Length: 136
Image 1: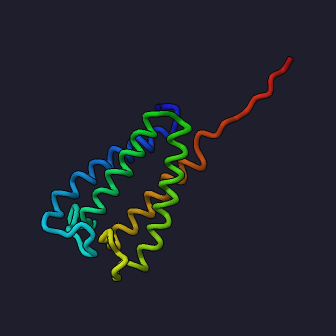
Image 2 (image 1 turned 90 degrees about the vertical axis):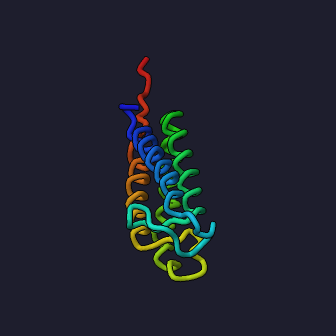
């Protein structure tokens, strides 16, 4: 894992997102599963139970990929990074509408964009395979 930025990023982000998903349930008591307004995690990030479940699933996918190998970590980092990029952008437009089923707020949007940059950066730029031709 020390030689693969993708494995390291996936493992660390996976553990963090699992923790965030679990901690989110501590602030969402009494909040509807798909409420457009949620409890504040760390006093800043809005979450509802659906958002917590999403964090748990994303954390599990990243952690499993990071512990599995470079190819899995690279693929999952790139995929989840792309999803977070889309969510970070779209979130600004749906935050005050009924489409905001994850109870997203401005802090969430910026955190999703930051996660996207790191995950996509690792997934697209790190662990490049260099092919060496065999000399006879």
